[in-house]
Amino acid sequence: MGLVISLLFINLFEVYWFMIAPFEVTVLIDIILGMFLLIAVGMFFSEDSRINGIVFVLAISVISYHFLNQNRVIPDALLFGALLGVVLISGVIIRNRFDILATSAKILMSISFLIIVGYLLFGFFIKSYSTSELTAAEAAMVTTQNAFFYGVGIIVTCVFFLLLMYSIVGVKNSNIFVFGSRKSGKTYFLLGLHDYISNHFGAFPSREVILSGDPEDEKNLRLANLYATIQDKKIVTRTFNYHMALYELRGKKYGIIPVSLTLVDYAGEYFDRLNRREYLAAIAYLSKVLEMPEEQLKKNAGSFQFIEFIKEQHKDHLADMEFTRSIIISTLYHHLMKAGKVVFLIDGEKVSDPSKGAGQLSREFGEYIKTLMDIERNYLSRVFGGNKKYALVVTKTDLILRRSNELKGTLMLTHSDRLSDVEEQSKGACILEDKLFSSLNETLVFRNLINMMNDISVHFLSVSVDPTLEPTDETDDENPAPRELAPWGFSQLFRFTM
Image (tube, rainbow, N blue to C red; front, side, top):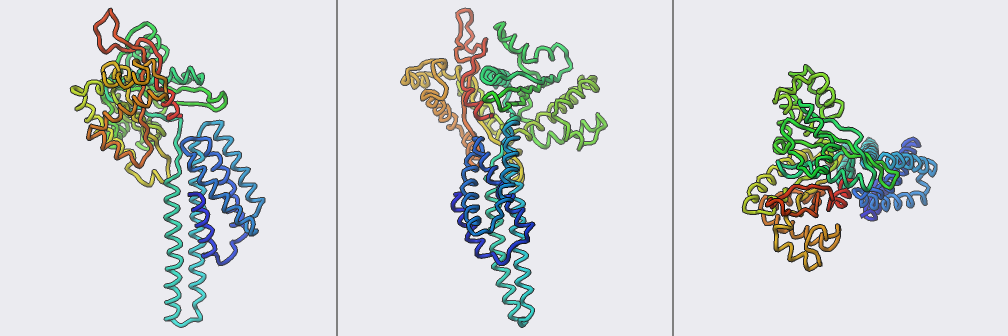
């Protein structure tokens, strides 16, 4: 692909070239070329944009080599652009913000697009102006030919510009939003993810903000106290519709690259209310109550500082359920739209009992489709803005395996009959996920969801917070809650998130 792009550009350049560009424009183009080459190299470090990087490095290398041999490139300008690219890559790696490379590539590509289109339009007007010595009929014919010739060039440029802009992937790692219905396991899921990155990357909670009118609830929802509940072999209580918790986790990847995750825990009752209509209604209500402009609310909603401001300055309003609900909806929708990665949870308990859970899952998949339509409704934002990656994650995989004799029989072929015996990313794990996907794919609404995701990035994963979990002799509970954290499947999930 990179070779095709470079050869096409070189040949079209020779067709449309008619004059040497001014020195200043040439310097600018060569700086852009050098920066773009290094930005493409930097894309190698991110799995999300690695393919883009390979394509662009190949294309830009061939173009640079061709024009250097023809002395049409100023080497010093090219080198200066490359040095700027090195500075940018260094900052990106230190901050672990590879989406900045994609944004920079789109900006440079947009500038290049404007220069090329401007050059073609200038060529058209120059050629048309030179027809002054011709008769009116001859001038009209030449102008029409020029319009067709340069019009084709502009159309080809626009097509390739849009295709390349659309193909550039830039996903912000630090913002992750977890979608899940009531009892789907969001809180345990977040605890499992926190446990995994804490053990493997030295992560720690750098900031926690709990929204609740009850100080006791605030205390219980802190990460340390949630862990204490599990260590005491107790069940973590569900998150109620007047609760919301924001957690920021920090660590270091390879001991150098900062890892930062922002996670939100909330009541499952809100999962079908996170859309633009509900968000705008919440903003309008808060604007009236807080006497604050809507634009300012849209800018601030969702931040740690804004939630702290509400708790300190408007604590009395938290007794009003409509006010609390509006704060939660505006915060959740803000994080959903800003998130680079969106995780849709699929409740493993419903998967394990199709007779009771199939209908509920279909309704939830329908809500996920509505959410995707709301997120991806604006094509131009996907071309010129950031991208999102999506994951469908089956929770409570240990429960599914306990209840499914078919899955047990399949895993026994790999010498495993319990989830704790199955190594992550092993053949048994792949078989398990394939079986789960095939089972879900029998549902029409799930197939519709997958079909909708065909042109966007989506992963299918399965996880368990405690793969060793089994019913005990002391209880006849067939679905015991986790009493310890031993995350399974979270290595793949971490690769997705980071």
